[in-house]
Length: 217
Image 1 (cartoon, rainbow, N blue to C red):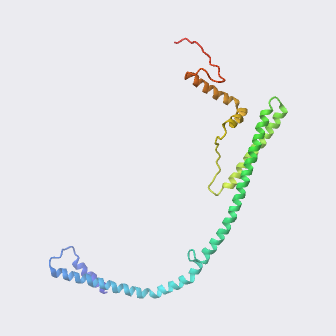
Image 2: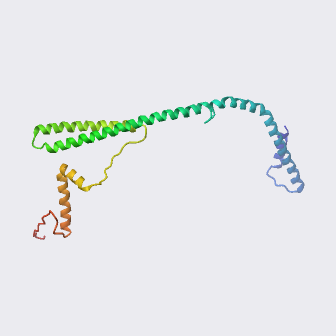
Image 3: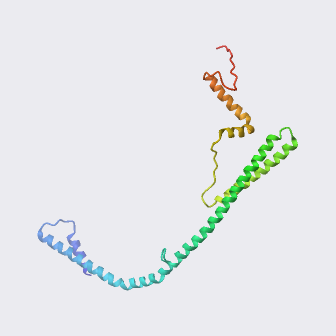
């Protein structure tokens, strides 16, 4: 009631009109100080009135904190301990899956090499060719199995295995691919030789430079 009455009095002063005299200033200041003091007393009354509720809330918190307090209660402590235990098992299973995927990949690569070598050596031999094709089919099946193993090892981890090639021994790589794709090498060498001849080179190892006279149009 006191604050309500002071509020109404403050409204009378704060009506949009400016203070014009010292007496008006002092009277308005008295109202401001009075409502400020009444507000402080009202806040103390509020605290006293809610103190029993605060005590009840504290009692409730004290009763439940040992159970559900973040990071300290039994629930979080138990979850953290079990989480560590489960994570260790999952890491073990993930490592086993990764090892199985790697073994499958190596096996598929080995079968692919054997099949390609068999195809290269089967020229002119129908029976050998059929056997080589069977080996290639088996190699392809092994590659599919390796991909499935890789997917099983990476699913749920946000990872997929990607393979890339890095040239570390040019001579060995040339020998390897020369026996498997000679035509591609011949085309590459021919393109390099043509470029050198156009640039003016006339003495290129392994290349015969042909000179022709052509009519200009």
